[in-house]
Image 1: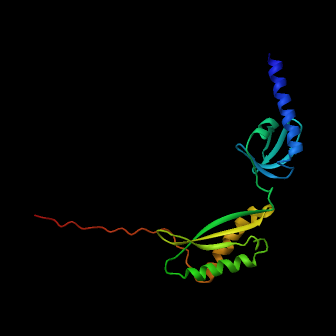
Image 2 (image 1 turned 135 degrees about the vertical axis):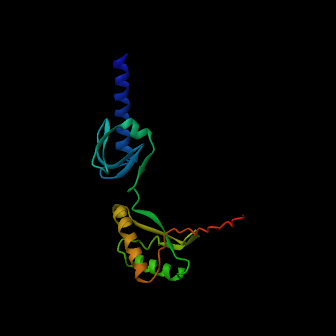
Image 3 (image 1 turned 30 degrees about the vertical axis):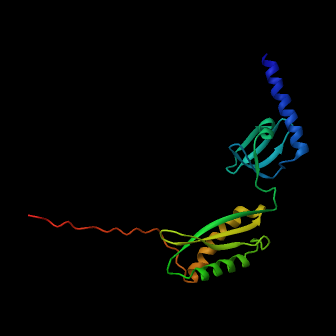
Length: 180
């Protein structure tokens, strides 16, 4: 009975491994997420797939689990989009801020112009006018560009005199009059 159950698992992993080889939903080097494991595909073997997590941990996932799970492949598409919400002061010129942001995006070598970036006033927040910035970049440099570009936008806005406010609260205290 135990041998039958174990061989069923081996056969299932073997067949799933063959499907993975022929279907190719992931390739070695791809950045993926399968169930709760995210990282780089290091190897696709006949019974299992090896993923190196972003923390450098190697995880062996049985191919049956890979094949039957939802797979998110972060680099299958040549380009990937990210979004920032940048708050500016109500007293600042939103159109000027949008232009500053667009100029930084046009000058960045990895910010794709097709599809073009979107920059627009998204909402009026408690402490700021919120500008949405949506940028497409090559998938292979997505993380690096996403982390570097935010600082470039911040410094460009500050250089142009645009204030990035912090949340504020106004508290009114009432004084009770004493009655004797």
